[in-house]
Image (cartoon, rainbow, N blue to C red):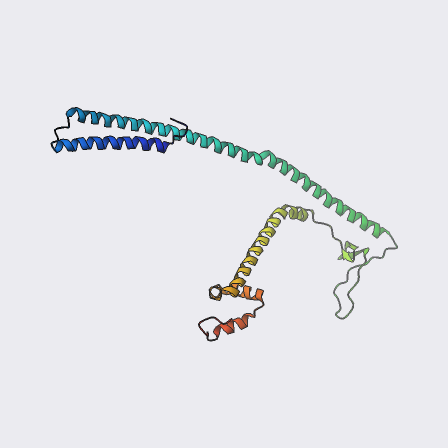
Length: 260
């Protein structure tokens, strides 16, 4: 078996030899039946022996072909195993564990940052509360219509329903909810995926509107087959009034073409 032999090629050659042997034997047998005196029993036996030998060679070829196929399958398996191992090595469980650890450390830093921010808020509030020169400024309850809106301190303190509040930039600066901030961080990857999907969908819609607008300009008959929502979006892009377009469609069509 040479390097360039294929299973199909081996089987094809063997099957051709069998067909040739069959045809040789069949021809001799027909000549005997036709009373041809030139055909001897030795010739018939020789043809039968040739057919038997061709059958053995065909069986040998099938075995060689199957062995070659198995070798090809083994080669394909090893190539697939090697490629799969290479792919699996790109990102391993170790990488995931390292990423989980890094994310955990980042979440721990986030928690500490939230707590530090809230502690700073409390310290700043106590400083302002302790200073007699800083007047307390409580939020107003309700607002009388027609009167100026209240202006709150850029930095100060007050009470809201008996709870201390800190004014920063004219607004109340509350304590951060640690769990809410941590949840927001955990949801961020999914939120980014959602935003990316929305961006991609918007791009698809934009391309569709452009294509539909092109149909309005170039192939009005095809444009008229579009769903109403797509026609409406395309005409809006082109600055064509939708109601006027609908009114024009109701008009009689002249010269066998749509009104443009």
